[in-house]
Image (tube, rainbow, N blue to C red; front, side, top):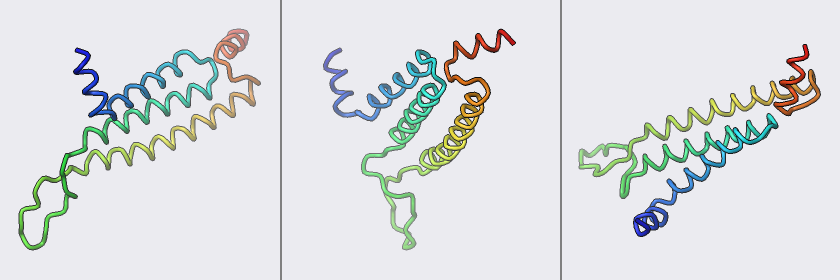
Length: 126
């Protein structure tokens, strides 16, 4: 059991890092009352998912997915699809972060706080 765990940590460190980032992100989302910290936790979780996609797409000894024009065998090729998906997800993530920060700025301007528990109390009084 321990040998298997050490083998995974030493050979597949990207997966271990992914789980660490995912755990930190989920903890920040759940444990923090500050909305900015929650948004940072969402971004960490999102980064862990990106790392997972890239780690899964890695092919040992794989070539770029370009077929040679001379008709020779290209050999083992890596799929570009996971990388394209990650690039698209990064753009979407940046847009969601910008919208989230804009909402946070508006909430702070309206209520004067970024703490979730205080916001609930203020909204209950209205």
